[in-house]
Length: 112
Image: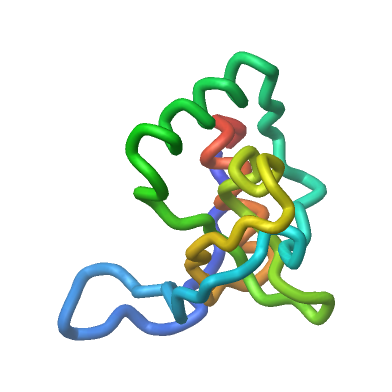
């Protein structure tokens, strides 16, 4: 049975789901802390494909991170972060507890 965490906040009356997006900020890749439990590994071919997409279409989606005492910890966008430490990316700052972020990473990787 999948792990289920209690809601951090009640569901608002205006919608069915909580909005955990706190803010979007421009952040240099070098300032983001990679999530050590990130299960995704990207090879050379994926890296080349990402560079080709970014070259053709530009930045079309944000990276995602949570605030930690040490800084912003990246949840999604590790490959883009690795491309150039000086590059600035739009980063969605999510209002998730560390255990919620961990569960989100496991769900995205297919690990229930």
